[in-house]
Image 1 (cartoon, rainbow, N blue to C red):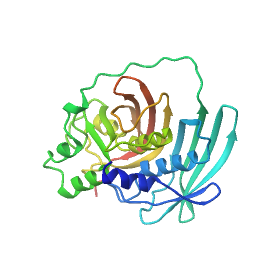
Image 2 (cartoon, helix red, strand yellow):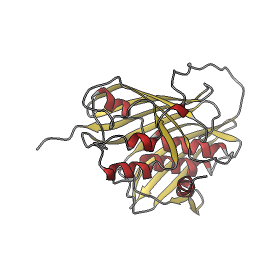
Image 3 (spheres, rainbow, N blue to C red):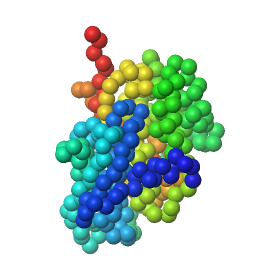
Image 4 (cartoon, rainbow, N blue to C red):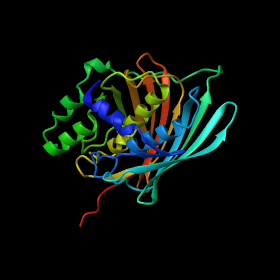
Length: 290
């Protein structure tokens, strides 16, 4: 396991303060606030620790309410909304400086047999044939060295490979609002299914709004031609997967309007199984000229 992955796992591990109350640490991200994927992943950890081990996460719905302060701890309060025969529901509120910054509703289910079908996996090149994240980032001379290093530090725990140029690599001309990345953790994980859900949740917030930027030829936060933040985030976990094995994140944007952009995605395992569906809306604004 890489040092960066171990550091991330330590970050996502929560301190139990009291019954159904947990505390997590924070760190800064590419932008000067807590990375939304970190808060979402920590909230899933908090919810999962109140659920029987035989019930696995099948969906989560979250709202980002306020920017997180990377210099302060985050307290996660868990409400046990329902414990049914098949489903368990939890609500988590993340609090900083006495105010909620994030809310999560998560549902867990015992395993059962049922109807089974899925959308086919889209075509994508083998991840082994693609440049690593570091190779791609360092190939763009227009990106300041400081920006490149911040990206590499923020993503050091994950091997994330773009199929095509990301928005910050090739911008100025609108492209199809469709983006693909392969990702896996930089090291093996334990077999705990919740841990793999937590890591997939963490990574899912890294690139989902890229397709919004592509549609308008914008480079994004890395080059400063838009400002924005995640507003809400939803995930459905369909089939077992491992976050330490290659996953294809196929993303598209059907709409942007009113200062908001919508991203939709499917995550497939390398052998073609549809593992996760993801939807996110975010604020995407063009900076005003003075």
